[in-house]
Length: 91
Image 1 (cartoon, rainbow, N blue to C red):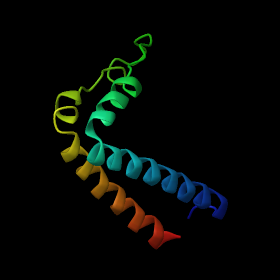
Image 2 (cartoon, helix red, strand yellow; image 1 turned 90 degrees about the vertical axis):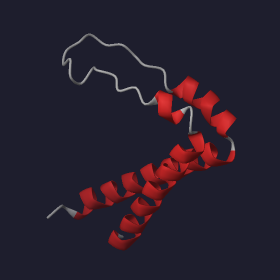
Image 3 (cartoon, rainbow, N blue to C red; image 1 turned 135 degrees about the vertical axis):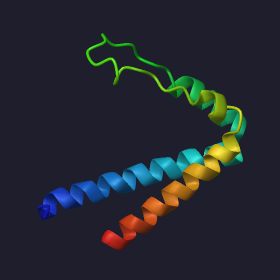
Image 4 (cartoon, one colour; image 1 turned 180 degrees about the vertical axis):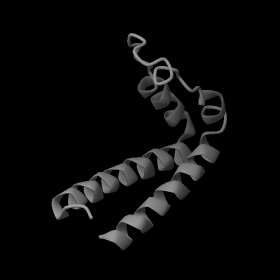
């Protein structure tokens, strides 16, 4: 079983992840043009030397996400709500 301090850190990281996911989902649903503009800025790929080619391979989901930002936002919102339910149950 995890030490109490480690469990507390994991729960707080989960809350931060769920909060940021919820915020991104709401922006995608409410203001899709702003979401597309933000995705262009935050989605910048940083090249590294190919230490591990499998890890350094980029998975491109932009064609779906940028064409259907509201559907993507709804999907992320459902996932974030699931995280919130799990975290509130654990804490």
